[in-house]
Image 1 (cartoon, rainbow, N blue to C red):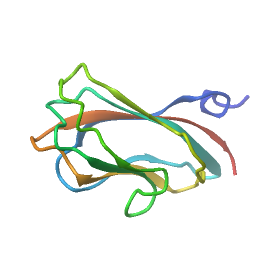
Image 2: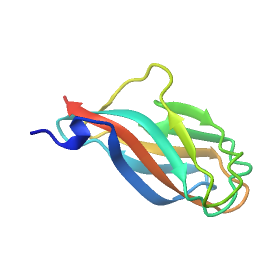
Image 3: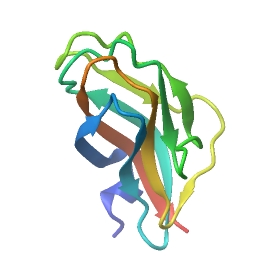
Length: 127
């Protein structure tokens, strides 16, 4: 029988303490061998501080994480811990192949030092 993550949308990764201020890439999920990953949503939650100033975050694979969603503005997440943001697929994308690393790249991060937990929701299929 198939794993649940091949039969339904599931939590593929939950990564705590992601730096939301400093420009740079953070890996969130590596696609297993022999699989394709179809990312459906990313949830930003449990922030340690305000994300005011955080106006440009990219999500996807590659060095620039720009294959899934680009220029995501999270600056309205100003209440730490309780605010959360759901980024859902709303356009055409390309699936991720085995060994692809899905991640976030901070382009213009929060003004204050801030971390967040990031959840990746999606499903896997055979390649």
